[in-house]
Length: 273
Ligand SMILES: C[S@@+](CC[C@H](N)C(=O)[O-])C[C@H]1O[C@@H](n2cnc3c(N)ncnc32)[C@H](O)[C@@H]1O
Image (cartoon, rainbow, N blue to C red; front, top):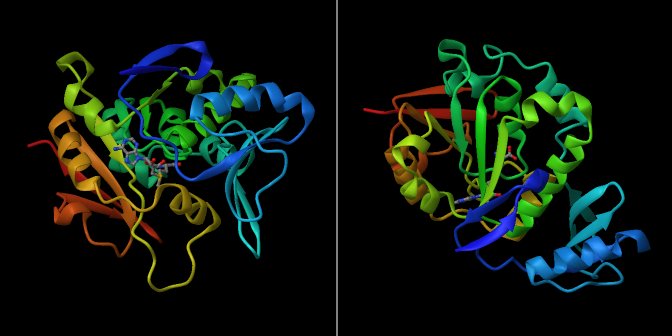
């Protein structure tokens, strides 16, 4: 069991984290970011670098926040957690429980604000929408690199006054969600567990988007999501919601009770029996 600081200065116990993926290192973009980059390098067991690698993944610490970058011979892709500003903030700010398929799948229009565990937090966008719509959301993320990006996004959002309501409903914990869900007490049991595991690699229909390319380079594709689904179904008192590509097979071959189908995405809903 190890301890890492979560966002907003709180400290949470977590289960053992896997070693970070194949990061070439952490690049302070300007001198004033060097101390923060060094602290992060120590925490992730990565090295500080002075220039971008010719190829591969690296973190760039800049005054605008922390970026995960993927450099290839042909391009340099970058992602960061963006919750308080930009397109994501606009979408979440204009969301309504009936208008958002994820909110309908989680039962928000019918039951009102609920306690949701987002067991695959990633860059926090789905959790952000749910929190904006009134849900209390515990975010679980097992990749230390993604966790660092998410902490950075939450920290930046916390400096914007308009974030204060929904941010207070989000709680970030680092560690393996399957372990956390299996060990949660009756009082900690969420009404809803939301899962958005890594999508299977695309074999047709073109290259995946920028974000998925970087995430797949860092994390690969999930092959243990079936056991996460089992842990989620045992823990959720009302339902488990799984986000899938529209045409994908159900997770672990388990048919849901019903589906909410969007243009490119589908939400499979497993009710507690
Ligand atoms: C596709 S991303 C989720 C994107 C997210 N829904 C969003 O809105 O940004 C999947 C994430 O789940 C995390 N993950 C997968 N299995 C996990 C587990 N058992 N426990 C915690 N995190 C997990 C991966 O590290 C990855 O960051």
